[in-house]
Length: 329
Image 1 (tube, one colour):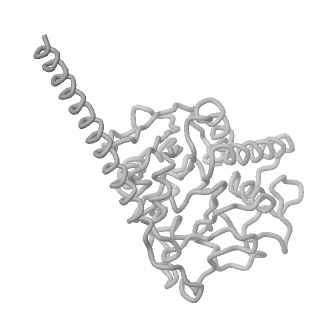
Image 2 (cartoon, helix red, strand yellow):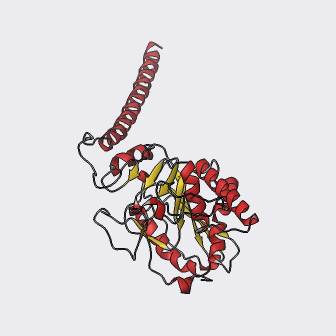
């Protein structure tokens, strides 16, 4: 009987040791995995001490209201990625491809899959009157595409006039609480270089490549006081391009809704701003300052000569014959 009891005690002790060992090695393994992941983050967070004596001196890098202006040489890609990776973000991206503009979708999407928000969840929303013409493009992991059919138009101006309305409704019906950030980008463009999370902010604008060194009184603002987009001479900071609108979903919703309401007032008064939604966008940013501004690196034009201050072209409007792609002059 004593021998049997001793055997039972031996077995129980052995089982206990095995359990303790499993628990110990499990915790040890988990700790090493944790330490390894923390070490990886720590490695990515290692960088040279910032210096107030170095950096870009040939361009403006911060606005008078303390919004950063993003240029090559003003950010550390690995560091910024390490910060945003921990936030597990999703970026919605809208594109309008109507009429003959659908021909630009393939290059837009394929170049985006090489350069745009790599390593992050991206959901493309394609507004088009020709869903069957949307090309099949191989998307990376955690990236998806939704096609949204909308009516065609005989005036290209109408397409831009309704952009804010459609953006507003998309956010209200599908994007609230589902994505963190959103960019609305023109389809007749192509990515040529890295476009990452350094572009994210509460509300993001891009400096138009045609006017970034132009005096503000020469900006093509809407100058008629009858329009809701009116900006008087002597006012304004930059001329912002309508080809790029971005930011946190709730902030972009406010922008789109405000511009749409102003567009409705203009329509009721039988007036159309000089550059449609772009004019209203510039009016909005005059009184609701962008919290981050993208340099012309993020919106160039393939037809433009590259000036010395442009170190890299990241995103550019492609060469095209407007007479052949637009439904009206």
